[in-house]
Length: 405
Image 1 (cartoon, helix red, strand yellow):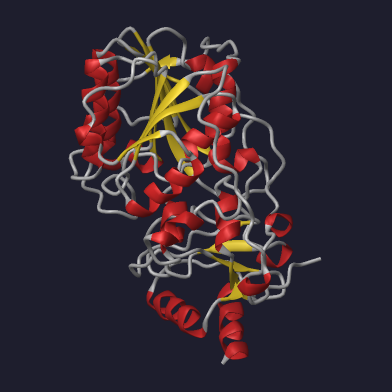
Image 2 (tube, rainbow, N blue to C red):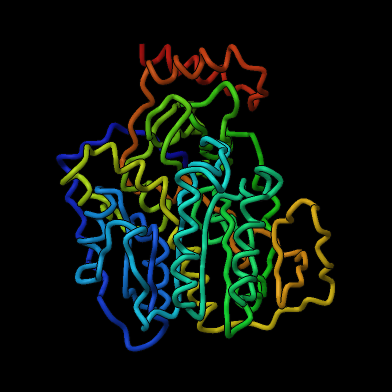
């Protein structure tokens, strides 16, 4: 039975209690999280049995979230002022800024003002090399400027003596209905990163890219219409911090009955693996709508949890069919390097077997109808574009506008 969108009645819904993360753990690695955002990587690692020793985040709203959710953990406000990492740290993580690397951003490259801050990671590693390093960013970095950003990162890791592996991973493999591909780069001085990041592969389910929205709810971006749509069958497209119309916002969902709605912020948090209400502390210093940006910029908790679990129980990696990377060739979806030699891997974006995500069963909170203004703006942009849209989709948007107007 299809979900019927409803207008959220926030005053009637109790605020969920979210427990802060415990400061320490007897087992697992000690983690230092740079560019921590709202703690997606660190929460995933915590759930896998690791603990957080240090957090660093400059954005005020995200800082408020970290203060509450990681109570008692040392929080630094600026990565450029950290002199050195604590000696207890086993794993350095960094979901470094993507603004200059993303297709939706400024595409200035790794030398851009924001994404260039990844250099601070290597500054700290040159002072003290941690046994393990985990980096995360948008998969578009593999293509931008012929992969210059990735080349700079892996070359810096090799210079410091690290073995490395990277893989583009789709968050949907965890069962969360959000189509989100991100590249994860894992490096080590003492272990085999391939046995963590590349050793499992299930391949994607067969029914992911359908366009028949009348069979299941489908997500799209109402802020698009000219250059893209972000269509996702039975899922939402990648949650993001900004949009083409200049505001952080959730995607829209078209339901089998033809109605269009936006999900509640608490379901957006859940679509990134957080408990509902996780970002509510940000409202102390920012408007409620800022929470959408914080969630869109976060790392999916469940993916970090998978990496954290595999760090504790690595699996053998079979490299018998891997081929050497040709210098200057495009970067593949997954690869690895040991001792200065680089190889392409055939690992897909789906490490573990998972059923296709089901958006209709996932949503827990009332949705709100997409406004006439938002839907009309989308239709105006769609009318000027040369994009191909799913069958009967634009007719449904027109019907939605007429019904509300």
